Amino acid sequence: MHKAALPDDELDRQKSLESMGILTSDADPELDRITRVAQRIFGSEIVAISLLDNDRQFFKSNINQPTSETPRDISFCGHVIHDNQAFVVEDATNDDRFRDNPLVTDAPFVRSYAGVPLTNPDGFKIGTLCVVDTTTRQFSTEDLQILEDLGLWAETIIALRYGARTPQQVYDDLDPAKQEMLTDPKTRSWNATGMTEFLHRELINSRLKHTPIAIYRFEIDDHENLVKTYGKETMERVVQAIASAVTSSLRDRDVVGRVDRYGFACLMPGAREEQTSFLGFKLCDTVREQCRFTDNNGDPVRITVSVGATWAEPEAKRHSSARDILDIAGSALKVAREQDIENVVYHALPVPADAG
Image (tube, rainbow, N blue to C red; front, top):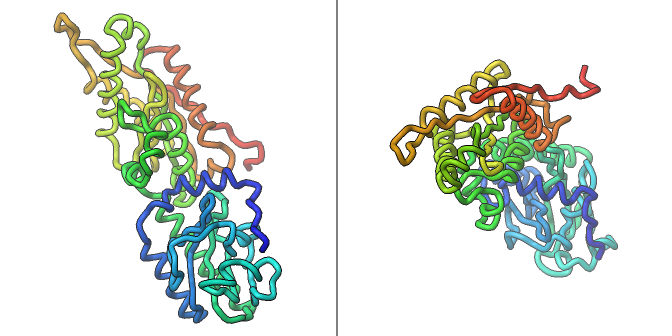
């Protein structure tokens, strides 16, 4: 048996797959519809949409596949993701790669197989659509074209389903260990790693839906003196109040996270470029109006933030990474803080050399 090699971009491919949340989500009726159509067209005994995850092949949708997953190292689908075209095995018992494969020598006794790779909007091959039979079979050029068309349908559904969930839905889909890794325990918002991963996800969705994103970094003004005067515990409560106030003022699809001790990031999908600075000042207003507190003498203490902003057009993912974009907003924040309090500074993303 020849075990399929891992793709050269396996680490990035796996990270992209995990960021979609598709591995932990419920069964999808639209994907089930595709496998049913494939079975009616091909008359195959087994039809599946599989996802290749670490050391397993997970069946997101399947007909007559006896298990929900199999080891990845014995999968036929592991071979499919190395190419951009259909992968066909007409008689597995006469194929050196598969003749002694447990899926051939034991149930489900695979004899013929045809599969096409499924690519996510970020360009990684995350799995396959495949048809499987227990008898040998030939596949015509027309057969493979139909299978590729069904694969494109599956790719579209996967991209639409798993690029448009709210932050809360994404959080709910994470296992406890992943939740701990990506969130700040004090504010219960995303941490720096979580915000980077979320922006990565939103950039994929932006390209798919052809919608832009406004990106913000903001930080408590004069926080060094505030800490000296009122103490770290008081300032921690202020940080929690800011996270709560900003989150409650945003739409369900907007994202806010604590990216350092006294700093935050915010993503607003769909914001127009001309709105970006205005929405930055709205963040300032929200904090000033909702996050004040009183000192031991009963006097009000004013809390303000300064904001760095940038804006990503739908194709920004082609030339800027999530980390790059957050850094651009961070550089704008640095300028804003140097100039004044409650200041908003906008920095445009660099234009790629080959643009236009």
